[in-house]
Length: 244
Image (cartoon, helix red, strand yellow):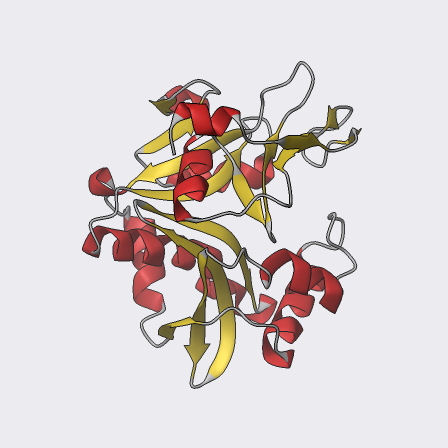
């Protein structure tokens, strides 16, 4: 899709609401018109412009006088796991990992519900509901290659990473896991597993969503180096001092 075609796309604004990440600020987003068909080419082009997928929609922050939310991606070729990250990988060798179809099943929802209740009781997605789970994670656009990357211990589901596969990248959408398995660091494991898989597939980037310098909840993303951020105009290497 060329620049002219992108200029013909229709975007809508969300109403302004309190920011979930920065106190005393307000946020809003723009999203692609729901009637626009989304294929891999369009998804890739908007991904390069800092858009993310939520359910069937592609969106990006569009706040007045604030550009704190910056899309980030891991430069896969340059990534080398730290000692701590290697430990995470090693302590989870007893898990099996499989690409699975995206679907709403009692097993998946039960894990999601448990995760939200235990890990995010003060978040926007609390209290969880099956309708919320279905719309957020189980309804990707028809032409998007979306999967559940499932982590199991002796057939028991312990973690799920929701992943979109693009022609030139992996987009990590969301991860939920069994809170009782916190010692496994399953959130870290899912990112490390995706980076490792991307290296084997010669995919240059793994997209991790948005990073906010002053938000502690998002600081973990800076641990996967080298990291690039979208400034609103271009992708640039993340300066080391920004991640401190």
